[in-house]
Image (cartoon, rainbow, N blue to C red; front, side, top):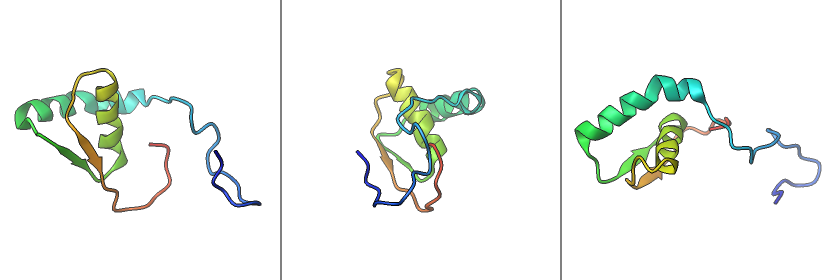
Length: 80
């Protein structure tokens, strides 16, 4: 589905590709796991794309089942 008006170009190609950001995973995954074990939240609210990506990755692996809500306060185009 293309929601762009005629004459407009997409900002990214292959947006549906399932990309992984292994560097971020290696840097932050253990920290997020430790934080979740320590705090044991019932709900997580993310205001940035990086924790959203990490938590989504953990959900796909069935590491967590905690509901996640995304509330982005800054609008910057990126692949996360």
